[in-house]
Image 1 (spheres, one colour):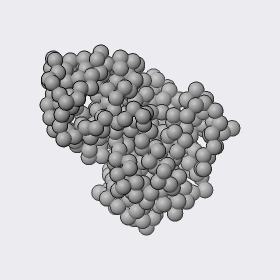
Image 2 (cartoon, rainbow, N blue to C red):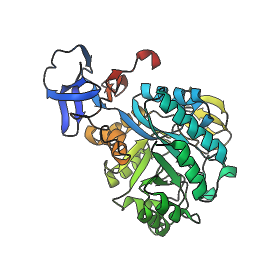
Image 3 (cartoon, rainbow, N blue to C red):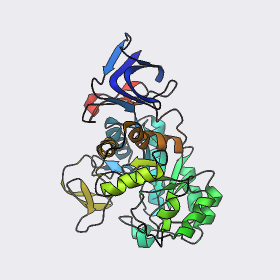
Length: 380
């Protein structure tokens, strides 16, 4: 039996000065005041106790890429983000030639089946059915028109892992593909030049998410609201927000989180292999990037190429913008968990899986608990 205590335990009902008791990998009890005796005590002191962070969009970290096609890279990325507080994540595969994307998915599944990356809970396919006009750092030569046969192959490779797919709804056949596969795939609109009518049609067909809102899509305009306008007013839809200070101005970040509410916005990292690396020029198998002040760009350009973000840092940033602790926790954990059906995670409540992050007073990660077990400091 383990007890986790702290002056600020963030639960769905409020912030407790209290504790939670962990047994069998789950939260068995929550309480106020002095903590009970236990076999092991984890104390955040004057800091914060939150549900483990949930990331729907993560490509890499510590010099490794999820989609490099090797087991070692998948394991390294998952372990690095787990140690930084992300207890559940979707492994994101960038747009590449079809066979390379399929191989990357197969490697992810192999690693998950082996138990080497227990924090990976699904696969995110960022493409290849994206707009060449809004491809960002995606491989333009690998972009394709919507293809049901290829999607079937990718789903077969993913086996029973949940799948998110980013798609541009204005492409010929995209809305039809969404309608045909919406019961098997969580479709996210992104890397798109869609207008408001095209986006609304995709949401009606079953799309339920927007990939890194405001990025790789037309800006919100009062006469041409576009994809963003359709998403912001549709209560069925959730939006991803990259809170690294580079993808979104802080004013836009706060506007978006406030406009849709914490139940409809999810912080994501869109982390590249550069996450966790020092500033400098870095060479990865699929791209050359420069990192300057945590801003990641394709080398020699101003094009953002993912981020160097950890979800704990995104959480701290929104807290620094004045977003209250319950809303910030929802943005970093609860919204994403609910969207993808992780009903046993994303909130500290009795019966939930014991995925817990302990932060100090400055909101820096101190201890990570995954399924009731402490992640060793040596891996952080």
